[in-house]
Image (tube, rainbow, N blue to C red; front, side, top):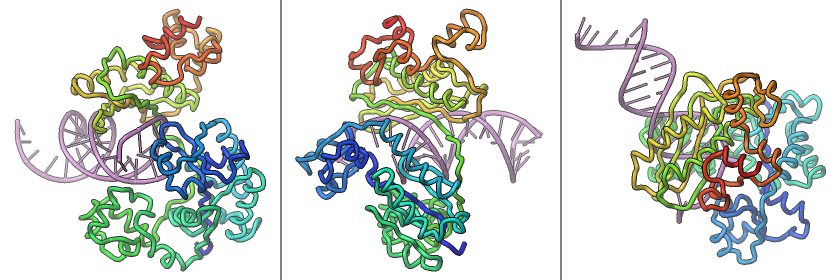
Length: 411
DNA sequence: TCTGGGGTCCTAGGACCC
DNA sequence: TCTGGGGTCCTAGGACCC
């Protein structure tokens, strides 16, 4: 490729920026979005050392005048939608990474909109004008390199690395800029004296392999030498769907945990149905007081998106964990589903006509109705049915034994 | 420094089949 | 019946990313 046609576009401090747009009086102030932890914060807050992922109490210690605002997920979704609309006005080849980040392949758009550099500039200005948000852009010949370039360009900047200039840009950067180098790998590399990406590029894969293992070694060595053939993919199906809920450290019984498991499973099943997918493998994860965690999984023969079927499997797995770790305090319960297949769309909404449920015996219909999502129940009852797994444990709802009680309570 | 929720990918061992 | 090789599927854990 002879043009830097792969763009990585990344909105700056997205949640915090939206909060400021929604309340202009916050402009120029240190603002953080989050509850227990900081999800996002303005650059004014970062000057005080506040960072995403930090506990709110720690953030306040560093910045007493920090303004904390609640997240408004609807607003994020709306802004994100607008931004992605702008992305797709430049190229159909857009690969979303998250709500605020995407790769764009603009090599096919050059004859329409000019060089990648021109496109990046126009894209940044369109996003700014139409949404008020700042987006940083990296433009290079490789996916991973564009991602790095956009990070270096932040805040509110763009970096274009022309073909031939990749090594000069890449090699002086610290190893932690590489995709796949987290705290553990960084520590290992540093212990062997590897500080920059150039250091990784120069040593052999064999040496690297003895530090981080063969898989990571091949991966990191390739990236450090600017090898990354991955194309921008514009339609990727999710490979797993999960939900989890943290809780105060405490020994808990199956009776206490069952409603939480039910809620989480219902959330997962409902999202599966919304995507018209079904799952074969159910994984239950439990985190203990010492932050260690275990998973237990099981695979069923037939893919399913039914809450009751998934709960049935999940309960057995949870029981297994409770039996194996009878004394541990539990701080998190999670469920994930993998082995996703594509489903025929199913209508299992609570309250719809029996015909829409696909018919069957009264028992079957009831079982299907019980698979209605919490969303559906909310819609139907117009009440705050359940908000969070921890509510169940703290007794803030009178919900005690799974979904059926929710229905009887409010009916 | 271990606090939240939603994900991806990799490794490794065991069971099972041919 | 055992030994060898190859492949697939399942389970469990770990590192990393946003």
